Length: 633
Image (cartoon, rainbow, N blue to C red; front, top):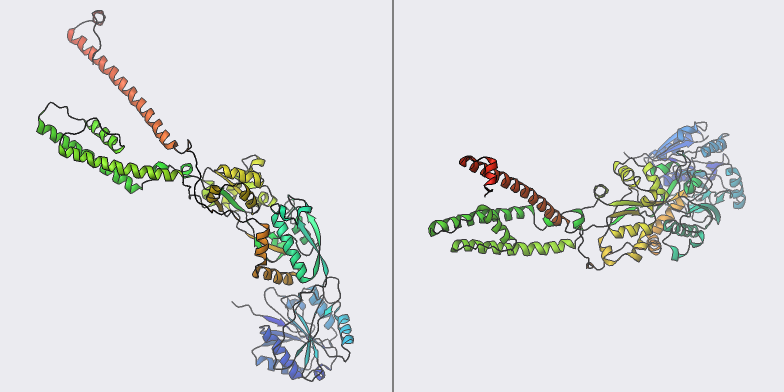
């Protein structure tokens, strides 16, 4: 739904001779031009004019699809309070309550960006005298830098109007800007930019963490507390462009609630208490901070990702099942079974045709021969007939292709890294160790989030470790990452450590996972700050022309890039062929079980044979032992 834009047009008349100073037709044209230029469709009129003059104004404005409401000067000021729309007032200063009306509007913060004002007054031959009188009259009214107030007075010619912007900054007196000329049928001139803050001094807190203030502007130490240093540089550029000076307040924190209260520490705390006007350190845009500070504009991205090296395939899966897909494995098993059956049938037919005393090959021996051929181990009982030899030949060819393909793929898999970990959930389900950089934001984030995955990360992975292992520095964290199977949460400062310590093949395995949902840093200003808009415009301009990007590249090392994807020589580890050792262990255990079963079977079989012979010969047990009867197979 479109928001109805309402304008407050304030006509400040110093005498009843307004209509004599400026022709009513000129005044109506001025109001229409003003409203059209600001895309306004509704206004309110508060004057002591004659009824016929008011109705004439309303009639002419309505012809341009502009709604103008008539109200008395004693109207309740609360009816003009808005949050999402523009609203306006037309005030006749000849009314006794005019000044009181403006003072009430000032207390309600109505001279802000939601209220558009057009002040009209009679002219004076002495412009300097007129300015002094106007300044004195408006001095009690809180007209800050971000107001939308324009004063209109009669020019030298009958249909000429002079337009003045009026505002004040801090404790400085009201400033009346040089006039702009307007005549009927002309476009309403734009207000000049208010980009000169007259060398005013603004207090600005700056967070100094992990590095002394003496290194704050030294690029040799840019990898320490880089976010604050870059922010400080950008804010100083804003000060230079807007012509204001900074009085820096050094603090050791960005800003977090103290003792579960609504009072903040650090940069946010100074702005919340009104002890500073703008933060010289950018802050992360979080909903919890919107109640204590206002964010003027975005600065640069915030990086707080999980950094790790992609693990090798052997660390996250069994590489000995990966060379072939499931369908290929099924085809191999099916072919082996079919060839085994055909081989048995062929040799049985050979036995029937030969009628020789040659022993029949058992099923177990056939299966062992087939497995030996598939594994390229050969056989001790080659077939004699042509058909069986053809089957053996095809089995040998099958084994050659299988073993060659399998071996080549295994070699490639031993040098490959896994792409299975792409989310925080997958990281937590893996065998990775986890740590974070020891900064206030990382420690306090668990108190600000209700997301189950993040709370699981803290309570099951971080808080179960010793503090110095769970929360550490960039140097220690990146060193652990290089060892493998370790994920470290750090910011862009870590790129400097990576570029100095990581090998090329490690950079090719490097990967990040976004951890924190908020990834934007912004310029914080005091609530209701009059400098918000001018700072926001210049900050956006720095981004649009690429200036911020250039400074970001100066202060932050780039993310490690893989320039040479060749793998360094890596010895095969025990973990790489652990599945093969595990299979061998299973085989040993299974063979011992069968050995024990065979031994029991052999023992009881011979015992039964001995008992059967003794019963057939009717020999007592003692006599059988004395005569030398032994167990036989």
